[in-house]
Amino acid sequence: MSVRLSVNLNDEVAEALKDIAEKRGLTATEAVRRAIAWYKFIDDEVVEGGRKIQLVDPKTDKVSEVAVVG
Image (cartoon, rainbow, N blue to C red; front, side, top):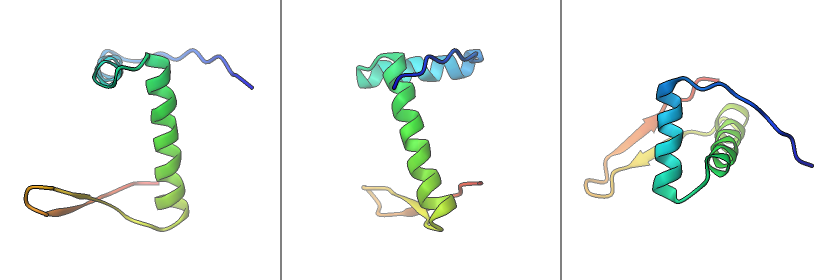
């Protein structure tokens, strides 16, 4: 099944989408698909699963916790 969706993006979000798509060699559509998949994963793990997300700096091994508001 496929759903066609039309969205309005402000200039900042449109530029971010363009930047992400270009960096990854993706179309804007594929970048949006991946962003939605990431959002669902985070929502399932953090909001529904009670887990935490952490970022680790590979140079310093410093760990930062990402706050996710559900």
